Image 1 (cartoon, rainbow, N blue to C red):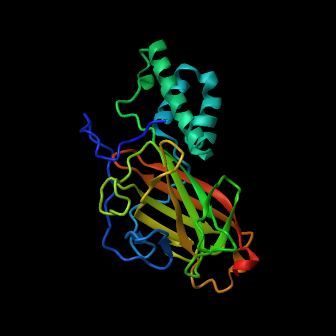
Image 2 (cartoon, rainbow, N blue to C red):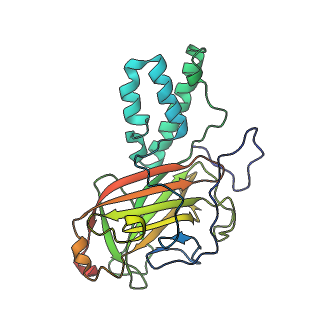
Amino acid sequence: MQVKPAHPPPPRGSDPAPRRPRALALALSQAVLLAACPTPPGETETGTSTTSDTEGAVANKLCIRYVDCVAEVNPGGLSEADGRLGEAGTCWSEAIADQDACVDECAAGLAKANLDYPSAKVCAPPAEQSDAVFEIGQAIFDPEDPFAEPSWAPLADGDTIAMVRGGQGLLMFAVGLRGANFVIAENPTDFADPMMPQVDMWMDIEGYNIGYAGHFARIYNYPIPFKPLDGADGIVEFLYVAVIVPDEISEPIVLDGQPGHIWIELFPYEEASILRELDVVIEVPAADI
């Protein structure tokens, strides 16, 4: 697993991937809050978005190139390669270590195909090989002690995400992020640092998408102060983004059992963006009503 430096990388021979515009002076709305202290500024559902709600998870760009290579030089293997490594491949719903192994597989596959089929330009490894990956999880709280440090749990398609009551008494969904192979800010509280990754995110709950742009909740251009995960070389974590239940929903039990959808696009420093999305089922524990 590649560990990115905490300082700006040296100048590259080609232009870096476009960086997202910063929106550091806008206030937070109560619809979506970032669960960290101090609270980083960012645009929320009250702003004007410049990001489209594109459907479909985006695989690692290196793996997309590898799948294109397989399509040209080994059409018989395309279905298997696309199913695991393509834009909607199963690799991108796995844990960080598994995603990282998929990226390594794509890099090795391109290198071999380039040797075996030198005339196939699509099999030539790109000059800039982004191996950044991330996964979506949720924070699990101790029901006996709401102020205790929560633990991480991964989320996969079809999993249940629980509504919880935060330390300030607000009902919320605690959406966690883990990643690897991208630069993070040296000081995780310096939200003006251009190396701090950003996310665009929205969450939908069927029948209750009453917020901005027709979503249950939404944020964008939002800095995420990732920190290295203890005991996990190269993996970084932000424990959770708190998606606050809108005041208009006076009886939260109506959300219980409803289908939901989480869409998150991560913008690492000088790397191509990465998109992940999950279908989930909403759970409203009786103790939190």
